[in-house]
Image 1 (cartoon, rainbow, N blue to C red):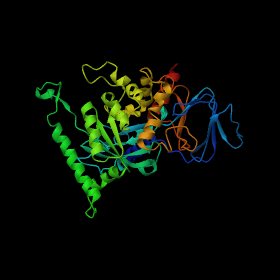
Image 2: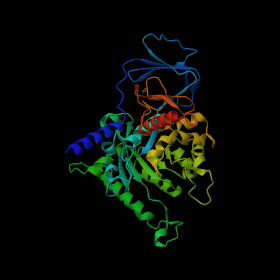
Image 3: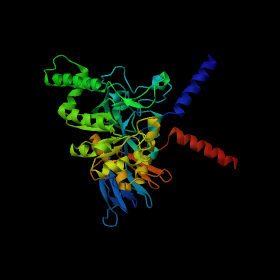
Image 4: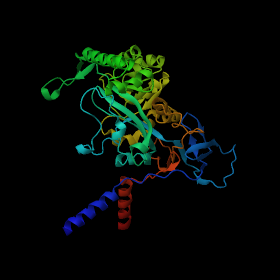
Length: 434
């Protein structure tokens, strides 16, 4: 029994040692950031800025050479030579839904069945995730937590990344429903001796018809008296009355075109394309219908044999130049860990045609607009939330993005993670051996 007690104490100590940092308390003192180069998020830059926030809201965002403010009573952060940015937003992410891929008990990103519009990702979100915690040192402070699987995966919500629980983390609850559009092409199953190359999906039309039928039933329910409660159909009511967005995950040209026509036929008021690998081929149609794109991961390989080698890198530029509203997302292999690299994916687009401020918009103001939270987040604008970070250098460059301060709703959040603790530990070890 004595050994068991000792083991229990050791396990408790270990669990405390690896627990997430305690969420920051509410802002109680007015804070001023002086001297930094402020990247507003809307394309504008203030070289010598003065930023003041109170009670979690930005009260002053100005050129320090023009505006003078009495600093008495303010907590002043001298950021001379540094850069300040709005908090980075990662859309379409499973952060907080899976902690360890190999441990089934920590995996809650999908449900059984194909039609799950009523499944809410928010209540499965783990605010104490160590993976979520690791976003903050790179300035990634908010995300759209999104379910996976099935034809309709479920409903996403938008959260901030420093909270006690999912209730505290919520920024926008049940913002939209996610529909996985069938692909017009499939790959052969090589493990069954089939040619692994692309081939036409001969079930495509049937799959699209099935989606039409489901939405017809949903509309009939929405237009009826709803006396008999049907949770899946009830969850879809918002996409018809405009209170929710419909996020359609689709990559190919025909699929995107069919998805646009489907939304128009069904009176969907707010639609977003997610993925959009061939979105540049229908960019004019997207612009004409005011449909934004949450673009696939920038650091990807071309998917077609005749694609340009740098197609994934320059796709954002092709769409932006056509006037399409674009934001970046990171779904795919190791997507939760890769979410912290979102600012560097944006940096890659600079090497392929965008300016740095245009690239910054892809991960700040544009996702805020697409997700419907731009009234409070996405740019350093007076009256908006003081959700921002200060970096030693260029936030889009992994060599220089060294975040010194990060604020969420005016709260100074911890930048310590399990990774930084290990870094400090082994750095001290190396120093002691010299």
